[in-house]
Image (cartoon, rainbow, N blue to C red):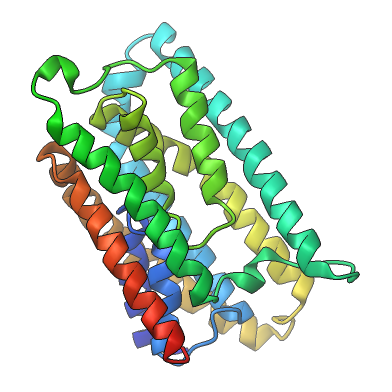
Length: 289
């Protein structure tokens, strides 16, 4: 893995992580095209740090909006915290159960299996991309049909709507290609939440979820014990930190683009892109990637 590889992957991760097009699918395809092994421990460490970079991009970009929307008074803050907590618990229950079930089926009597072993399967990524694309497309087309500002969505969120978003996020966790941001923002829009609030809530959930994902990947890395050699570990850490900075910058650019497209009513175009990307990924699978 070279610095050029890291820069390319950081740009792909930074742009795709914060757009509703599935960063994991794009990163896996990029790694395969570069001749890299998506399951290598060094690559896992890099992806952990790329996620960290995009998490900080989310915090920097949304902080002013979150402060205005959720931190004006104690009542707004505690309601926001309650809704985030509810959605996160449902994400953990549903996503955790799915991951454990899939890992148990993969173990075949072994002591431990990791769902990450499936993350380079393009034949699984393609249908997940297509499913996310259909959800985004439906939400976007229904949003375009609304004729009045009153039908553009609620400016507040109910516990039921937050629970739905959290449940959908849980369904996304085991499947590479099923865009987390695309699915959660679309779920909010379909349930009647305004686009800006759906976006704010979705990325606030991402900030809570990312440390748990990072912790899981670090635990996996340590358990696999592939980076015990100090020189190898030092090199991997240095490249990963560099990648995190690049992903942070790319993530800020992606967030600006996403917000503009949301405000312009072009959400459905992300769905079309995901459907086209699913076709390309399946073609690459049949080509032997």
